[in-house]
Image (cartoon, rainbow, N blue to C red; front, side, top):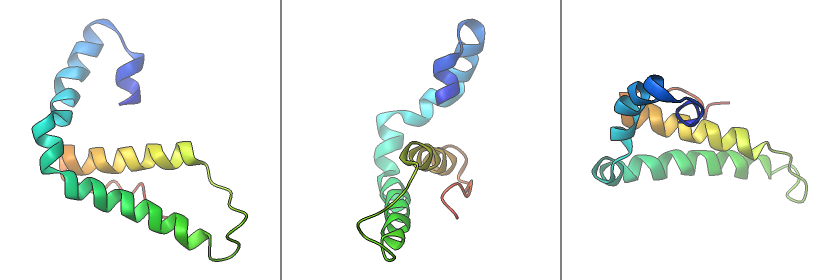
Length: 87
């Protein structure tokens, strides 16, 4: 998705033709449970990190959210686990 924002011209049109249909409302609504499951998996990882010290957690939330987006994209677009949420 990030690469789609960075490109222009014919390359954008080619990428958009493949990627944007994956994010239409009907596709997202049908995959709602999958999105919730992936998000819950990430949240469970975060919860497991708080077992040691609930007051002090160091996470790179941007990277983690990008991994969540890639996992969702892999499942919706290719029906494949990209294993981006696995530690």
